[in-house]
Image 1 (spheres, one colour):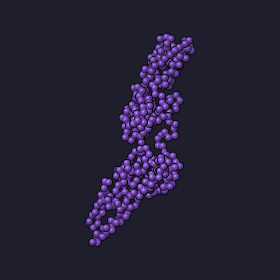
Image 2 (cartoon, one colour):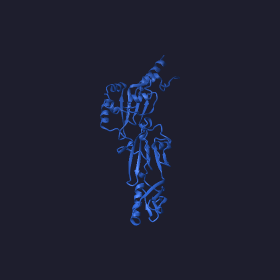
Image 3 (tube, one colour):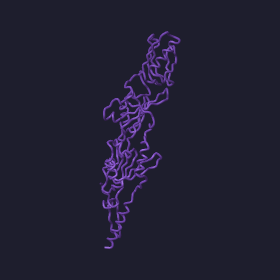
Image 4 (cartoon, rainbow, N blue to C red):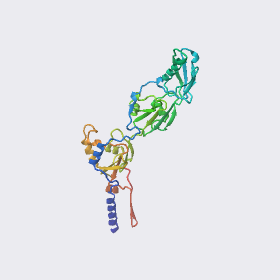
Amino acid sequence: MYRTLLLIFLCSLMSAGCTRQQLTPTITLAKFQEETAASHVRNNTPYAGKILTPAQAVADDDDISDYILGPGDLITVKVFETSDLNTETRISSRGDITMPLLGNIHIQDLTAREAEQKIERALTKNYMRVAHVTLFVKERMDQNVTVVGAVKHPGTFEMQARKRLMACIAMAGGLSDSAGDTCYITRKNPRTHTSKVFLVDLNQLINNGQVSMDILIHRSDIIFVPQSNMVQVDGAVRKPGAYKIDGEMTIDGALAAAGGLAMYADANDIKLIRKKKNGTREILQLSMKDIIAMKKNQNTSIKNGPWHNLLLQNGDVIFAEASGSRTFYSGVGFSLGFLGTGISYKAPRY
């Protein structure tokens, strides 16, 4: 009898001790909402602050006149006034071609039309009154495209001919499971040494068939597919893990994605952990009652209601604390032995 009473007493102590929080709150709800409202949602891509051009704004054509000539390209030059000057040659590593009468002419980093005009000026300056020149690019060399980010096989690939965005992503093995809904294409201008970044909505392209997003890729373009925004759900939930933020995800939405609260969860102790710009982390404690009440009080749009400042952001962690008494009686990982008598409890799956 004595041993039994002592054992029950020890179990009670352990149960009470297990009610201690694993994570201590560092901020109140009011202060958290105030800070969130005063700050911008962080953009974790390398293109934060840059001017982005929507993919629909890119001309959908394959006009060679805008092609920038480079070393290795095989070109054909025709002079209408005399076939003796017609030339088929490759652009040298220095960016030059050699033509009868004219010798070496530097045409690297010119468009086809600009090269035609340069050759016409050289001919009319010393040899002809009038010259009409056409330049045709027979083979394009150094047609490399780089595909990085959330693709299965990132790297640099050679294009035998110009391809569209999805064909280039396919060369990299396609999108990975963690791919986000957007894509960035960086295009450099070799003459001005400036870059333009095009923004592609992959969701519109792949799921809604908006083919205007499937733009033509140029020489040396860099395609970057960022990973989707993710949140981590852990603690007393049925399926802990990382989950993709799908649209406007709220805390209860993240918990639902993780299978809901486990039997031993403390519904009055749900933690939202968010990393601040200075690298520190804030821990906000909420109850399911708080969460439901805020959602009921929201306005017609989720962005206008009090819930807005609690929309989940990339990198957020949701942690459901365990209730000490529920944990014990559910048998979560406790093993107690006393004077040769052992009692063990194993965590339930749900």
